[in-house]
Length: 83
Image (tube, rainbow, N blue to C red; front, top):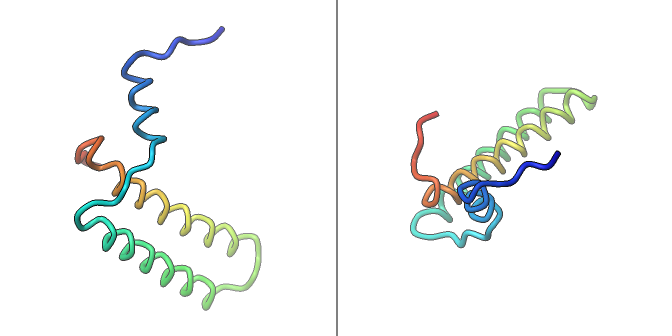
């Protein structure tokens, strides 16, 4: 069985998977998030031994940076929402 997408779902997907050119202060905020993620990854690498858990920690730090940057990119279309 295949579900038919609603117009709202179609619009949300279109917006989510579209390119969002940075505006205003977004470039600086992207950089701040990336820099903090890099510093956190350095702390992980400096304080843990190479192992699957270290790899997972780095991967999750990278994922956190990417998700935070997506939140910045999509803020205008989604509006600010509380966590």
